[in-house]
Length: 521
Image (cartoon, one colour):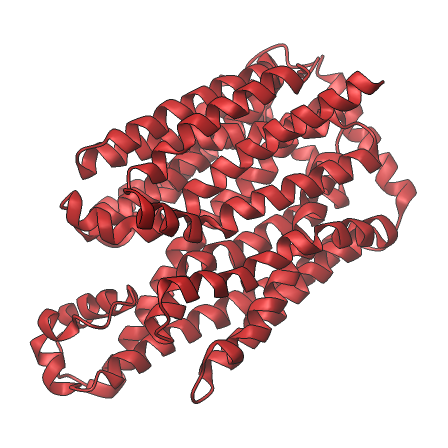
């Protein structure tokens, strides 16, 4: 018994370290983009690709990973993914040009998405007892939050004391350490009914997700004909995926799980977190530095207010879930998160806005994410039979990362459009549309000091820089309002989907899911 407890602890350490590596590569890279612009001679499109290549690649492999893990073994697939992540991180650190770094980032995203999906499936199978599983996912949620939440500060520290390459190279020894824990602690598991591989489902969904992600993140740079072509190909691939899943005797995407209210309601929680909180963490440092004028050290400290509650609230969240069920805990977390964004919107719009006016909103949003995160993950994987954990975790993480990829792009678009709208209202026709768009993109980076050299006409129209500053404030107002209203709507949807408390019905739903899985054998 002691060996089993020790082995589970080691497995938990491996899964947590894998999720830490995955999150760090999303949130630590934005802080080094200005450095990459100079040392790699990267232009604006290159920098976009350096960020988007990782996220697009992640979303492409998620469901395929769940199926492969169920078929060939979750431990085996996780080991392969972790090795690949370490190698891809090494390639990123050694890249001597922007195109090479983009390719390496795409490979890193493929491996990272697979590694992250497997970590959820492994924990769900490794911890069968509900209470122990809850504790494991609390720890996993805390460490995952450290990776995503502290990424900007960690990336900034690495660049301050070393070079940009170590933002990537640091993952090589950490991946090796994760392999030690995974090898020593994780028990191999697979779906006993996964007798055949759903190759058609894997290929069609991967093409569809890649097409939609590419269209959202890069569509503005495509011509109208190319946009129509990419959109049509993505739609056709998704239609082919639906047909493949209906006709396959062993589909990787089991639509019957959406009849389980617990599962579907929890999926809304994952979507809500990545609709607002996680994409905004990429832009919040720009607000603190560009709008409020704080240095990197102060900005890093202020980000702790946004991220620390995730770690502090995880155990409270699990107690709420245990006492009131997920149908209360998850919508309550989303509601709190939405209130936090509305409070940030109000605080940022006040005259003389500073860190004190933003403090209530960032703190409330942090509490909201803490109340939502671990109950969401625990509920999605706990709602289905253990042998379908890979499939369930694949759907869960797919929903999260597809939402994250979409909303990183959407928040950036809203920020730029909010800036452009303010400038157009204030300046009228003084700037032509192309110049206005380019200037809005420049202001959206938060670097307002060099605007006079970038746009001499703006220097004449706005010599004090007050107009550019007000435009940036307006853009962030759009972003905060969109995030707040969106996540409040998702809180209501989640509550409705969960429905009234009905434990016997949930038990019957899970039994039907398990029976459907067994019927395919």
